[in-house]
Amino acid sequence: MTDPNTASSPHSEFSRPLALDQVIDGQALHMSVEANADERSALAARLKLPAVNALTAELAISKWRGSGIAMSGQLSANVTQTCVITLEPFEEGVSGTIEAHFLPPRLIEPQEEEDVLLEAEDEVIEPLPESSIDVGELVTQHLSLALDPHPKKPGAEFTNGASDEPGVSPNPFSVLKGLVDPDS
Image (tube, rainbow, N blue to C red; front, side):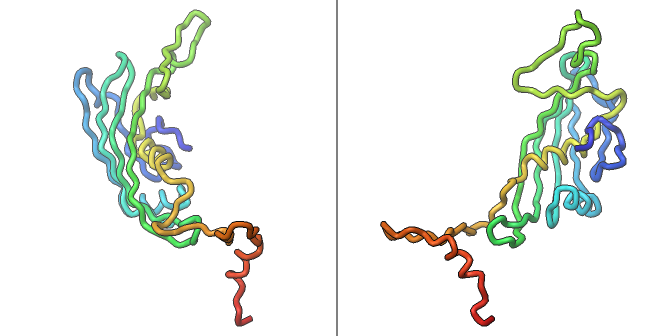
């Protein structure tokens, strides 16, 4: 994936750079982002979806651990996915939580053996860039993680052709029988 730390990555379909000097100690910065039609089309291609119909996110951004940045919020999207059972497209609402933490690289990776790393048990801490964070790319990555990897259209059920009768073993070719055109 594209690095969310780059201000204007040439590969970012949905770029919303946030200058780090906008985040002030003691004040949460609230940010709303929304993808336009061209960005949604490019995101659909990147995420291998028939369409991204809507994508918005509401974020709270604040200073964290002195020199770091914390982001939290919610994303909301409407996407068209392809059902893994019927192969038909269908629309689905997607929502997800966004949590991200950034610290200067010197606090994440030791520069010398005596440097102490800050560790968090359940958090992934990203290196803080020098000037800006691409919030749009961060939202895109969280959308990617929120998508169902095996989307099923509502009401679609997989049938394996097995009989419900006790003692009758299923014929593995019975599923194929329904796929053959009887008029050919």
